[in-house]
Image (cartoon, one colour):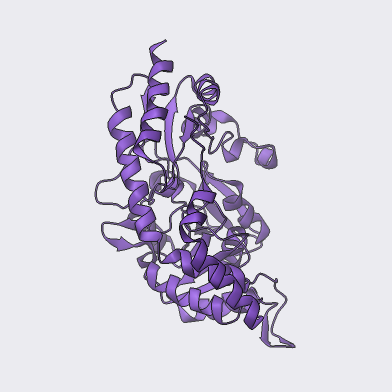
Length: 368
């Protein structure tokens, strides 16, 4: 049996009628850039996330960048980010004109370690970007307490955490701003690039909206120079259809993760994901660790099982950040895990039979 890493076609086939109707309405109304379909999605997604304001933008990287600029973070400032994430997290800091400061991750959750954040704070530190990696919430209560103590801003990178929660509270209950990606493979994915910025602060919402739209007050009246990052109507309409299914899809992911946990827990040499009791992990990715990762991935590929690595090079170890002068020894956990982590197939349409097939081949590999 072949098991793909993700199957967007299966998801589309389950909702193709409403999706086609939504696209047709946008075209019929010529509501191509922003417009009523984006505004409808913004209102619905804000409600889903427990936030007061939502702004649809061009992509998740722009969402982070716009949030930072709306908060006034820029030249001469420092922003602390986790050592294990996609480059968009750190890239947005540099785009804003600030300096990236990496902090080590927790060895169990793989999220940024608040104790390591505290060790990196300087007089130039202005913000923290906790990433809810793989869909597991970071320790926002501790991080936000730390931020309040030092007068820092918190921008959450929620690109993998649509619908995640902390002890029953939505992520929007914490920090200053949230940035989401709707890249097609996300738990809530568009059919192209799209992102969103959320906040509970009306002033920040207005500032972000202006910054994402050329700094304009009205069509040709611009208060400041900014950028052009607007969600298009077709993506807004598609996301609005898919949002109605997100809770159901998330529970399917969580059930699939529980099956993986049950079947993989006794396998020697395999470390299953650590979780925090009471938090809602939404399993954008199901990531195991193996000391023989590359050989395991190759073996699974031979058997028709697709896997991924998120991420094969910890951010401080990338050539892009050579100028910071780090060595792998500066981030021992992230540097070690980069050669051990392996993402297994994970999506709502995954069946128990498919999971059992994946696990059977992992067991066969580990028994040899």
